[in-house]
Length: 229
Image (cartoon, helix red, strand yellow):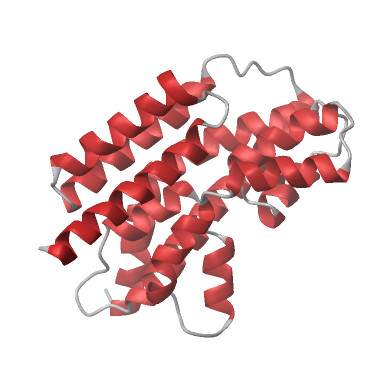
């Protein structure tokens, strides 16, 4: 097997856990989107252009309630503002210039970020190309699920009861992979404390955004403590 084909195969294997979560979730989105009365192909097109799972589910509710463009913009911005933290931490790992850089910025999702920070390319392989392929394969999985779901929703009755469990299960797999790469229990305990503390004592509605801000603050304080030492 050539080095090039080995790289493609390794990237695909890396994305299998995400694919197993993205495809059924994409199907659920496509079904819900088709119920709004749009042509089923638009579900797949939205996966290509938007590629933001939670935001796409949010868009279904907003479109169903005939929300205005300002409401859609504000809701999407608040929901996905956490990606600013992701992007800043990965800029040095992306290509300096070119279309691949802009695509990898566009295609950065929670799950892709987890894979990019927890996996290594095969020995001697192009690390940037490996990360690019991971991003591309993840989006292909999502678009495939959205398209299948859009078609199913336009053809047959389909119940999505219980499918929401797929996303928590996917995140648990990614957490395990992260721990294998960074076996520091204190980081994961801190993340759990921040998340649960925010959920129980601060805000349920803004839990994700506040948790991200608190986690960044803790990391900055820890970094500062190392500098003082």
